[in-house]
Amino acid sequence: MRKNLALAIVAAVSLLACAAGEPGSGGAAVPRGKETDAMQAGGKLEYAILGGGCFWCLEAAYELLPGVVSVENGYAGGSRRNPSYEEVSSGETGHAEVVRVVYDPAKVSYEELLDLFWKIHDPTTEDRQGADIGSQYRSVIFYAGEEQRLAAEASMRETQRRLVDPIVTELLPVPDFWIAEDYHQDYFKRNPNAAYCRIVIAPKLKKAGF
Image (cartoon, rainbow, N blue to C red; front, side):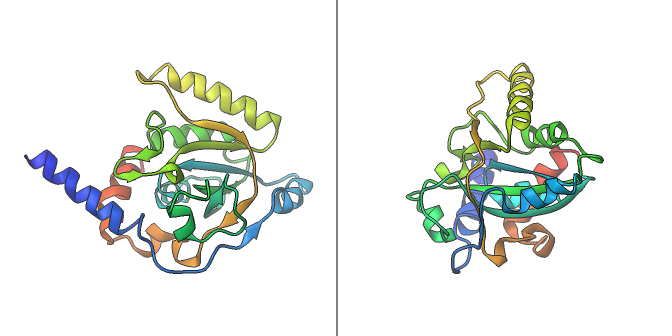
């Protein structure tokens, strides 16, 4: 009885928080490679684009990881240019909620980013993370180049050995990334006492070792 009640509360919070969001216009576009070329030219920073449920959860975790320079919430993998949160949430655009993680490879490796990725979400549930349901919450790794693709494949194989159910994470080349609305950025930092943050995000961070 208590377990069912807890699940109902989490489901309600998810629907009212991450799935509902706030009204706003579409995000700003970051075309593929635009910032990456500049970063790699200096030979210092690299980036990763990952999706694993509500982007607030991944953002909160990666912002705590040493070596990460910045994290942006956004949308990727869909057919519509500059989609709004409401459009993505409808499931009609094909986008996934993702984070774009800029990091210093001298301080943290791509493999370490993936290690956290597997910890912070369930890669065995298709189009769902907990009470967040829909294709926008699918598990996906968008790789930027052959090196990332090979690293992601190896990491996925290693992770699968520890799991009973098969991993359903998609592995695809980097598409255009669209930055989400301002109210989605730094969500956990700005709203630590919000219900979704306390009931959903905080336990995930604790499970991941933060």
